[in-house]
Length: 100
Image (cartoon, rainbow, N blue to C red; front, side, top):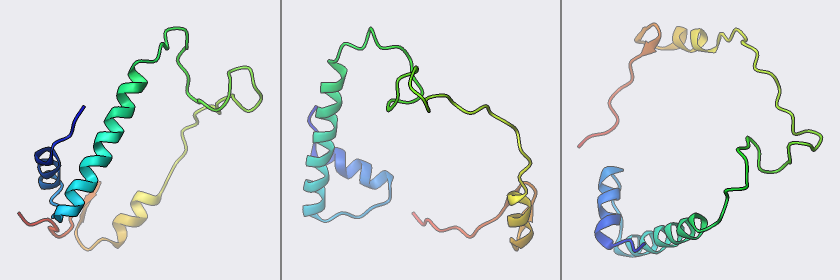
């Protein structure tokens, strides 16, 4: 897949980024390489590979077991909200940082 200069400029606009001409070309090449690699991955036959949660260990290897999910109380959100100047649980307001 070929990424055009216009594609890069469109993404940069969405991300509110200003790019130099050199950066546009650099990112165009990098994005093109990434998509070319993804196309190569799509050609692999993975029909015999089962779903996995971890790619570094086989299911039969030690350490491959997943720990059990346990719900734990976490008071971090309350502590953060207590320090916010404008809080209304469960949210707090922040100043607008993006101008368009």
